[in-house]
Image (tube, rainbow, N blue to C red; front, top):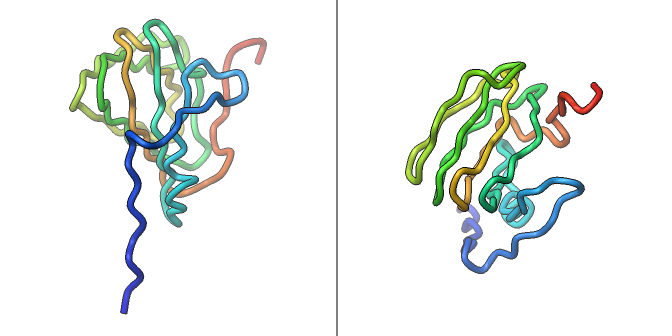
Amino acid sequence: MSETPEKLSLADTEARDVDDLEPRLKAVGYELRPGKMRPSVWVFDDGETSNRHYQEEQEELYHVLSGRFVLELGEDGAEELELDAGEMTVVAPETIRQVRCVEAGEVFVVGAPNAKDDGVVVGDGE
């Protein structure tokens, strides 16, 4: 018999500050403990951005739950992909990306495989 999966309410999950990042994190992956993926929900205020980064192994799925965002792609961020609530995209591990919030909201991000500390921040003197 298979084990009954955990259930988590996003509305009941506290957003917390992470290191020096502007967006706050709802650590759904920490709560649910999946083995093969790394899910998170990032909570952004207007104008906030994620770190410009790429992943060593993980491809990432971005699903906008609410708000409006621009995904800046490439070393200089010149390629932009606008994402509104309900829209999603997948980004390859080696693609440099940064999420910029246009209208406050939440982005559900799933990285796979589940690799801890897989992100590599670029810029800021690097």
